Image 1 (cartoon, one colour):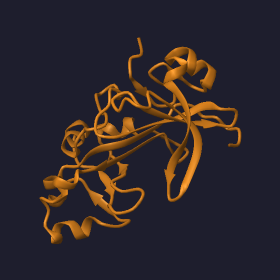
Image 2 (cartoon, one colour):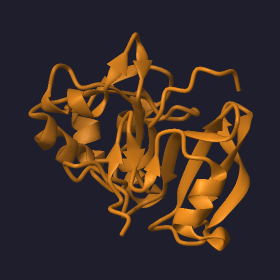
Image 3 (cartoon, one colour):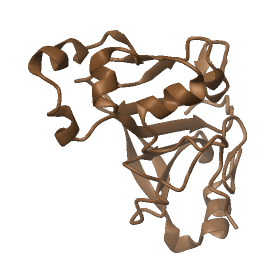
Image 4 (cartoon, helix red, strand yellow):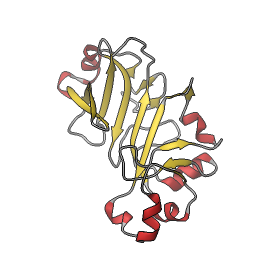
Length: 195
């Protein structure tokens, strides 16, 4: 009866704040929960868990805090059943995000580990989707496009999009590319013990 709903600071479906590996095995079945190393980018990784490892639509990585308690969940890929209340999920496009937001938003450039990361909603409606407390971001999203989509841009359009810089979703090259969400991380618990 998992509802696949991502709720920052609370839960991801039936994965509640601070759930233990034992609890997750009871909810999802022992064979559906595996211990893994989770790539964090820039050469860093952490021990964590993955549920539904072989099912791309249901797969979810779980970063655990000290004591093995669920703290952050992450999904990556092209599509997923996991979603926010407003329907945002893997595969949601830049243009769809603009409509939901009621206007453009800011994101980082491409060609590095934090490519296409949403940096802010510029006061739009989706600011609730990216809650921050004391500067700590609770939701992190990245957008990208398939190789075939990138080929629709000229070299002159692509070059300015590469690198660690801030872009507006309303830029003509980004509107033409219309990248989609390919990674979402959601903090579901504030666990203060050291990792």
